[in-house]
Length: 65
Image (cartoon, rainbow, N blue to C red; front, side, top):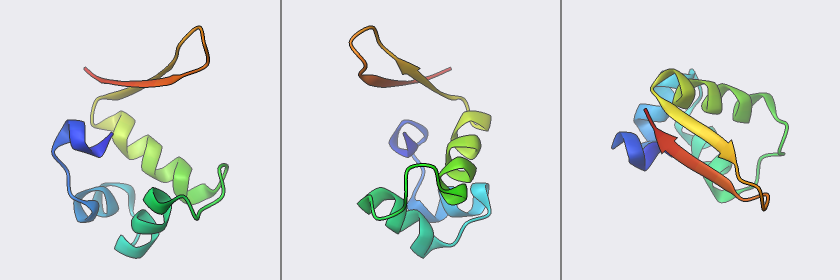
């Protein structure tokens, strides 16, 4: 999703109030699904115009407004 915005990990960290290492862990998949950090990152991406859509077959699609 951050690639749609041409954001670095540091850009996402700053926008979400997370540390760079937390963003890295999120992208590596080592953070829990419902973690507060993940919610902060998703909210920052949404504020920047990224939309997350679940398709009919359950696939998660991302788009930019």
